[in-house]
Image 1 (tube, rainbow, N blue to C red):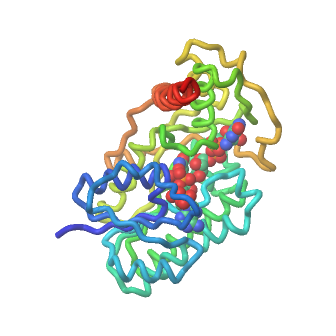
Image 2: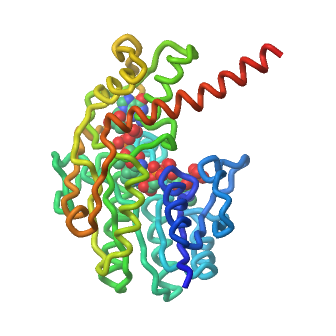
Image 3: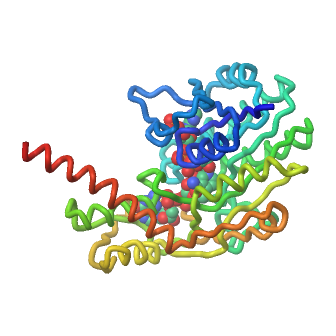
Length: 331
Ligand code: NDP
Ligand code: GDR
């Protein structure tokens, strides 16, 4: 029997890697896409597999979710769709809550009302731990520090509640930061790798950042989507932390990224307080022992390797663009 998966957030970093993973395993994959005035499917454009189907909808539109769940009758639902930028959540708190908190409720209700025997994955986040000091694991206290973190905490608990109240196989993956060349350009690691590439190619000579002291646990996104899938294959619905266990400051990440092209970050990084958040999360370092023990999940790519692979990808991609522009300009 062909398994059907429904992915919200399929056009995002994780959604695109997850779609590739599931198609590779023989799944029929259905993805929720939002209507934009111009298409923004660059992360999934390369997928030519006819088993991929895209449907218009939105996490803020319950009717679209109800209709799609009934139409697709998925065996597995991965809820990755969200306003995922922490700083933006301070500027758009209500929209963030509607998408990231109530959106999950809408989707769970659609599944419950359809009476489907389907497994549900919720994209929870280390941001729910917020001010709780590291290391953080599944039993650590939650203390979100942003509208994003608070909205995701609602989704986390409503996922637990639907599991207990309605016996739905619903799991919450509490994932620490994970990055890749497909990372959105306004998240700090990608901003750094793109900045480094721009400096190498002579497009600019500096990069402007906010708080360099924040500590994050950065892993490679491709490995994390494998963890999501494993959570849904286990016999029991449980919640898991996915993390590398290694804490790195934004400053250190800069050091690694600039070193890749033989430069000293201190000569090129400027500070701008407008990138600071009203409340910051100082340090997140995860303990993923449970995922290692129960799911056999273990990340391989180190933060240094991650910085290098992101810089290399941006140098190549931006290099192509710059060459084309120069060719065009020279007629
Ligand atoms: P991205 O920002 O790359 O992708 C977010 C996705 O959600 C996009 O496909 C976006 O669509 C979609 N989306 C946004 N708003 C809506 C909406 N109102 N209705 C439907 N879809 C919407 O995020 P990531 O891939 O990095 O993360 C995936 C999930 O995991 C998110 O929920 C995020 O909060 C969570 N998470 C991420 C971590 C990380 O380090 N990457 C860590 C822990 C949790 P569009 O392309 O149209 O904008
Ligand atoms: P985060 O990721 O908030 O951890 O959320 P982000 O890359 O945005 O910030 C990480 C840290 O870097 C500091 N920082 C900057 N951040 C950005 N974006 N831009 C800057 O210029 C800059 N300068 C310093 C931030 O203050 C912060 O401390 C990500 C998202 O993917 C969430 O969706 C996810 O849930 C969490 O990771 C786990």
